[in-house]
Amino acid sequence: MLRSRAAGLLISAFSCAFGTWMIVSGALGQARDARRSAASRAQGIAAWEQVYSVLTHARCINCHTATVYPQQGDDRQRHFANVVRGPEGKGVPGLNCASCHQETNADSTGVPGGHNWHLAPLSMKWQDLNDKPLSTAAVCRALTDRSKNHNLDGPGLLKHHEEEALVHWAWQPGQRPDGTMRTVPPLTHEEFVAATRRWAEAGTPCPRGR
Amino acid sequence: MATYQLNVNGERREVTVDPSTPLLWVLREDLKMTGTKYGCGVSACGACTVHVAGVATRSCMLPVSLVGERPVVTIEAIGRDPVGRAVQDAWVEKDVVQCGYCQSGQIMCAVALLKHMPKPTDANIEESMGANICRCGTYVRIREAIKSAAQRI
Image (cartoon, rainbow over all chains, first blue to last red; front, side, top):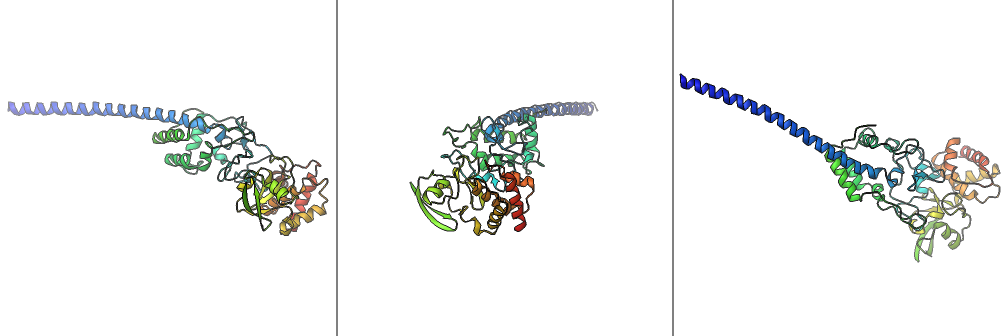
């Protein structure tokens, strides 16, 4: 009788301890997951800020305008010769992008070129109507909005940054008409792709704010 | 120097030039086709416009090395094209030309416009022709002629 009561008490104590351990370890696990998630988000946003530093460089943002025209130069002035966006971002008949921009840079004349030279669609505008770059949060939101970005998820955005010819052009922009080299974005292409990968693997988090 | 086989106005033309030579120089100096004009030399005025694979192209900034197999059509041959003929007839009808220096480029650009947009609005014309500069200011007559040509096509 005494032995069976002791056994019962032992089982109860064990169950209680086990339950407590489950609750505590669960809570600890959740806290750990939350810390890991926060760390991952922080790392993802840090990676995004590197991506943003490239996207807002003149070689990229000059063709991500909110206006009817592209820009040119490091001072991001309006493209000369009344060049306009046109319905498909490739200019208008008689004044297409291809009227001057060929498949490759023309260093002897200083005209940049690359495959399928065109403006980004207005859904991918990274500037406001006053030609001021949008905030890091706003560009991130636009870039990750699949209704605006040709339905690209994180891996899709990574592939775009890795392979798109006009993205590559930003690191091979050729010479200006005066023979000097055009500037390139602040990261190398490899660093840009690596930052995009870290951002994508963290779930493409965006900074808070406008 | 390098040798290029160019397709100009439907004919195979061989030139031996520096690869960086702009197509405009090849047309005018090597092939003696002087209908295409040198204006600004920096793609800003449109006087040098020719068609390369059907695209109105600024020949002053196009190195001959980048032309490749693409057919080139110049003002000398645009009248063989029905749209080109209609535009040239409209140019005569509306008496567009004043000094005439920019007009070969204007016509080449207008033909490119009408081939892609047979019934352009005033806004379409202004956008497409907006980079072809005429120091005589014949813009109003150019617009009238394009509309007249559009009715003929």
